[in-house]
Length: 373
DNA sequence: AAATCGGGGCG
DNA sequence: CGCCCAGATTT
Image 1 (cartoon, rainbow, N blue to C red):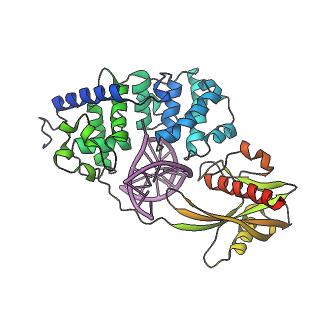
Image 2: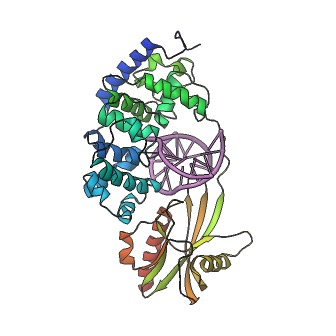
Image 3: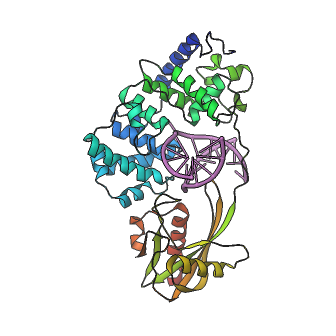
């Protein structure tokens, strides 16, 4: 093979040199993060779940609130789903919160509060895949298990000049092998975190700072002048679809009607104003009357528009319009939502809402106080 | 293998 | 405005 090693595997001496330099750099430059101040498997696990597809800066305040509310896995396991979801509000990928609670309860019930200690066993926990299992096993238990996340993929693609798209199965398999070769036998946790830390702070997606990189002399992409061009990805993604969404603020005795979205799907478990997508050729008021009939089984009269806003999800974007509405016939029953509730504005802080709905609630509050003046 | 699942930060 | 982030799960 053209990788410079007999037998086609990663070059042993080269990997040993990489491990040494990465580890030394990490120990001199590691950020002081809350989850690096503990070896409690519960807190390592919690941080790793939160960090899935989520930046360190975003996670920090959530991690602090969670560990304050639930210092031990037993505390989390004893919590209600609504309580956990509320603490997760705004962090995204809400199925993580559901899996988190399921896993905590499993650990308490089946493990007496002790986490499995190997990557192979950890993979069985809800929400724990190969990356997270390797991270927990190496950081909390010192197992020589590799990790491969977005940062590590980028670092490895550059160090080893992997030009193939990193989101293809065959390439990923090769990257896992390279990641395993770079796990330091004596310090697997620090070694894995060194790769991720380097990717986050030096070997960045754009404008990598090669001048301060501890392994620049060993980087094949840099030697080839291709560092910033890697990693390659397969797909040119198409433009995001756009939807017009209408939602209803249905007031009654100072309360508003909300529905809880079904678990498992988009924004599962969060509370929202009833409403839905505007179909082609449909007027907004017409669409809202139809949606409220379908979701709540009531006839309604649509009033003034309170607010409109734009919001982007990972795979589509929406324009969300909130209208006042009044029920003219029938009594609301949940035909789409798991549950309906009439909530006072004072209660809003106790429920979890999607980010876009949060913004609408703020406008609703201002509209009300503004009207009183 | 491809689709689904949030929200925010950055160039 | 597109891209990316300490990915997992489902189909």
